Image (cartoon, rainbow, N blue to C red):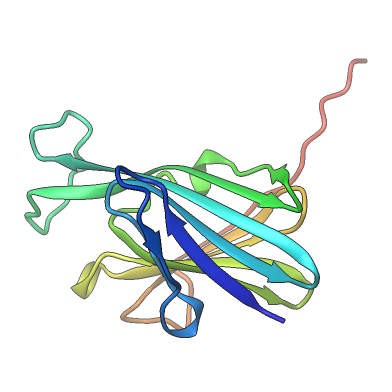
Length: 161
């Protein structure tokens, strides 16, 4: 059984409900939590965003002339209450995220987030298990069949020798 709900714990602690097809709206500034119970496991993805204007030194070099953008400041994934390792490169370049959902696909969990609009619109699929992110695929919404980026994450162990 798929149970999906979401809540926003920003300024007013506003409660949001998942929209069509389990999509959760992502706050433009604040924290959004996407919940799912899949394969009997409780999963949460906490997406922290910040809204910045063109007057900020952190404002990205973009060509669409927006007066402000939303950046993903942090992404935390938990499975059964335990944090999965999420490399910063999974979320650091995502601008204006709008919706997110979690599903089970071929035995692994997939967080899908969509963002921006028009020619800049994208969606990203983050594949993870109970311990870490394994893969990230970014797609242009204009050409959704083929990823524009495909990153595999491997666990590297450092050993004293």
